[in-house]
Image (cartoon, rainbow, N blue to C red):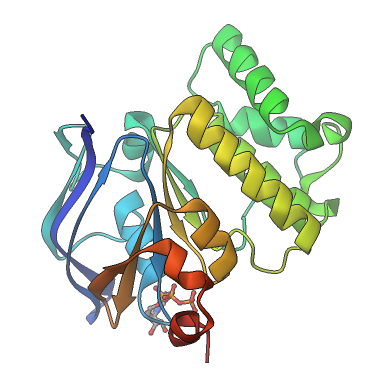
Length: 237
Ligand SMILES: Nc1ncnc2c1ncn2[C@@H]1O[C@H](COP(=O)(O)OP(=O)(O)OP(=O)(O)O)[C@@H](O)[C@H]1O
């Protein structure tokens, strides 16, 4: 039986007085891999930021692992098990790869942090030879892997992943796909993936929600995105 992990009810938010999300209702179950598809500016990143608590909801509620998290801070959400890999990665460029990972494990005891970081490096072995390198000199793909790794150091139950393939070379996109599949299977972590790369989303997600002008307008079977006619509707203009 699948257990409900995240539930949004009538979630609305925006920037200042500009409304962007107009009542979002959906559920993600434990271990589920859900995609979100929508054209530019439809509110995908705003939704993830609202889930993470970086933008306060103006209405509605949010429960996570059975707890109402609508009013709690991003840090408290992270402690509760929400992980976030923002668009553009936002790793710390002046810190080494290892120190970026340490930041991800902040709040844990030294022993726990070491164990968690060790496990993450095993899961993302591309980081092993570059642990002492500064985040800012890494390639875009390496930074994306580091951003994911840093998020994993917080041991999330659900990862909010915002356009991880943006500006990344194809070989690393394939590697990332394999890594996400392995993480989903191995850790049983749930993922909410915002993505405009249709092959990527269709190979990973078991369910895809469509967002239009701040509203969820439906759900599509990810396999249908391999059909050129259907995919055409969702490609960026
Ligand atoms: N900081 C901000 N202040 C005001 N408006 C914003 C801000 N950030 C985003 N917006 C607006 O909110 C709307 C939704 O933006 P959002 O980034 O959520 O879209 P998106 O679906 O993620 O698009 P993209 O695929 O281009 O990233 C857009 O009209 C955008 O211009």
